[in-house]
Image 1 (cartoon, one colour):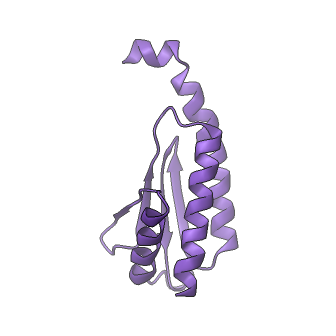
Image 2: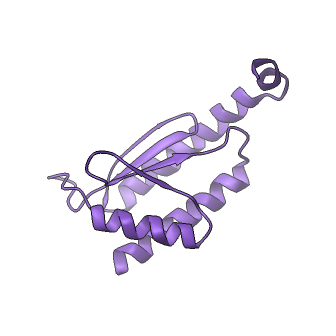
Length: 117
């Protein structure tokens, strides 16, 4: 695998896409009051959903609705964390910019729907 990763420039793709992913996640954190924090390294990332950014009270119901909405739209997300309010992205190392953008569009649309419900 390591030889293939080198030949196919997988690490370069991860670094490039991961940088863009981090920037987009940070913008979601600023844009949406329910995004308490974001964490990311490469293409592994998570978003913490909260009821209030000050108290960091977990928004578990919102998280469940978001995940259900995203799955219905074709985006597989994973719920993790002890409070059940963290959504984890496990993107493929070969993901393209277009695939990442589409996934994040689905994520944000699903989040907006969950907030309106």
